[in-house]
Image (cartoon, rainbow, N blue to C red):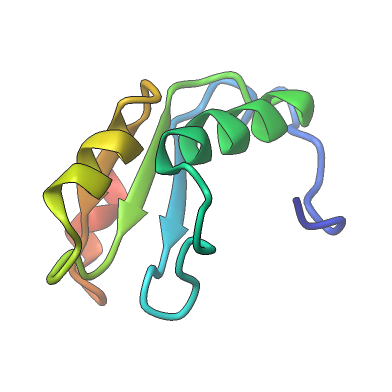
Length: 92
């Protein structure tokens, strides 16, 4: 987790939490179990006081194997495909 991330203020502690993930620029390391990604991010956010349900927004899913996506979403985290520059993504 980035050291510059601030603890949640009361205003944001229960607000919807969305993490944007550019899988093209930041792919999962070889051998890392995709089912661990969501729970790991969720744990770190909860440690910072963010307690709402986590959504991971992913830009381009083209070419991402279905079994990878199933494993990624099996951790209980919502996965959404997002269009870059689309303001409607802000209201997931």
